[in-house]
Length: 266
Ligand SMILES: [Zn+2]
Image (cartoon, rainbow, N blue to C red):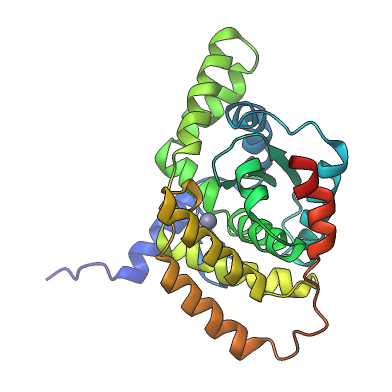
């Protein structure tokens, strides 16, 4: 009687066909359809259109430099992916932050206005950097939209049809939802990144509490796809208690944040 293929054997077949990669954040082997080199190509192609649909860049070089400075501090302590990272503040009033494959992070004016310190900003950017390092976005885009479609639009580039197609794909990218597991990994990995970059990880718990309050007023984009806020607060508080024993030397950066961001947005 032929034996049925065991799960590990089936998995191996898939890996040979599609390619498996280690997720450096979790250490787990994952099935990846898109080769890593494609991430930056895809991200670069769709970043302008995503930026456009999020209300364009906030026109304040000093503010943009500051967002990028905090983002690059996170990148320096993250798992090395050899991506070039770009952090951009956009005018969208919704409370949101998103990432594209290969190192592109966007944070909205709505989110920036609701944060209260540099450490809170570092927490949100750290969460997004984990999505990029773990290749959650590229995995989701290749699963939900399809590599052929993504690359076809890259190939057609600047033709009118290509531009239309890129706009359509950017809309789809903005509506993609991560799994709860991916979100939890981004939350916990983000705490590590921000602490290693010198920021107090408790600030991320404050951010979730702020988002929870905002979400009671009206549902938030950044929130809708994530695990329940209570759940997030619990697992993050638990990790902070167990992992980080001396938080007193870590930075909150409330004054810097207010001077460089909040006062500029009013
Ligand atoms: Zn997320």
